[in-house]
Length: 480
Ligand SMILES: Cc1cc2nc3c(=O)[nH]c(=O)nc-3n(C[C@H](O)[C@H](O)[C@H](O)COP(=O)(O)OP(=O)(O)OC[C@H]3O[C@@H](n4cnc5c(N)ncnc54)[C@H](O)[C@@H]3O)c2cc1C
Image (cartoon, rainbow, N blue to C red):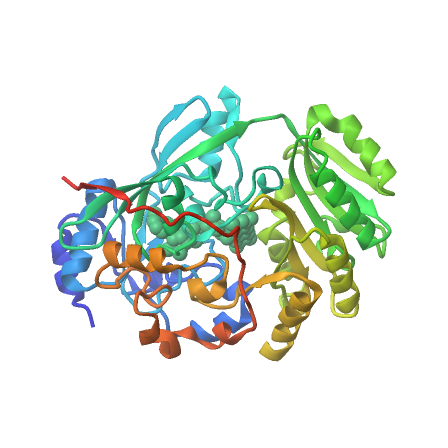
């Protein structure tokens, strides 16, 4: 049991909160809402204190104090993660990074900002100069840059630019180690993926350097299709129509639209929806494609001005579940990635297999150089065996299946945890204090203790292009 009094004394004047109610609240992210499996297992998992660094010097102080007192650290941005990322499994201190929100510089098409900067604030700062982030999660309003990199993976923009892990989508990261004399390490090139999607388990991200994309005047649109597979074929053609500039392609098979109050009026019974963001200049070729695909444009509006009370991306990606759960909290989903050359056939198999279970939901994205449709049926959860059967079915149909019902990075399957990752974890977190239980460097030690039932679900995880050169050892500079 770490000595909290000693830890607080070591922190000096770094602000902290010990009020039990606030600590319990910040020991939760969106995990319990999204996973009935993890909801069962997080009941008694709480941190002991919240610490609130004001600047990088405070972060270094927290890292040193944690090492001296063996205090676990759970990094936190906006706390919107939904795959167990932010749940403290072994107590400790929640480190709220939101005060480190300075945009450090922008140069042409690149930005460098502190980890606590909100994604919306970054876009608001860069859009007047004609640039914006290449991608953002549907939680853009509140999500932080550090949280997106530490816990997220893709989003609105990924149908054009790919996922965060794709080379070039994170240019540089500054990361602090947790040890008595914390080091500040700059990761560049492939090294950034050591820390991306590692749940804050192998270093404190203090700064990130991101590429920007042209900020087109975006329009958002709802397109209806009488048949779900027509919407899939349309989405595939749109995604590969390189001349049409786009930011979002999201599909909802019936009855999903009937479960979202704001979208229901736009969807005739039994139809499916495609929600898209298209650059304004491409309205004509887009409408031509819709007509040729058997769809009908039910709504077309400038970004954020549609008649459905929120920007359209707040009905896509992780938000589709959030909206559906307002009507029926029992509905869950899984994460299948259909990305083979025959992905339409694979999706058709799944749509047929799950016809009686629920509508299919997909986001279209580029993934590791290929086109991918990520999603699953939305269905009312009954038990883990039913969920396992859905995951097995998607895999049989041809999807790569990740696991959004486990606390552990490796079993989650969206980040491949290789030897280089473990070696880096050892170097940055020698006492295994960072989000312990999520990505141990002694995997054997806590496998049974910490895996939980979610890790037993059948998931082979995602694999990436082979022949990745091993990450070289990151350059280091000592903290002053
Ligand atoms: C409704 C909804 C929609 C979502 N849509 C998407 C989506 O479209 N795409 C997507 O990828 N995700 C999505 N998510 C998941 C999540 O919102 C995003 O990943 C978001 O970017 C997380 O940002 P945050 O600031 O809330 O991070 P947090 O939840 O605070 O943290 C996320 C993880 O990163 C770690 N972390 C935070 N800050 C740091 C730091 N400075 N250094 C090291 N580690 C750190 C945390 O410990 C945690 O493990 C969604 C979630 C919800 C609830």
